[in-house]
Length: 79
Picture (cartoon, helix red, strand yellow):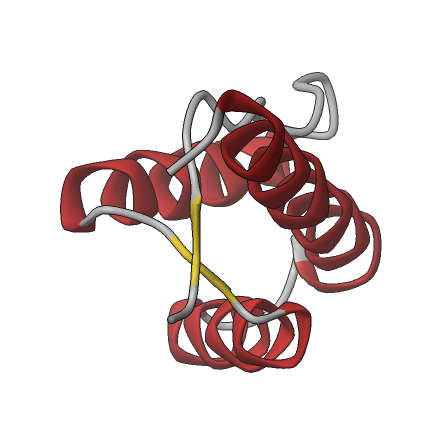
């Protein structure tokens, strides 16, 4: 996979995370996870299990309303 494809996938995943963080951060954990998974599927990108777990935990941490959206460090396009 080229660096350009990996960068594009990471940027697409970040857009999904930003949207979920903005609109769903106060929702139940299952709803947040579902919205994240649906957004990633629509964007045709995937996160590693560890990255997904970290992002979900950071979105959950936003419930204090003082944290910012998590940053995606790596994503891959769906083949």
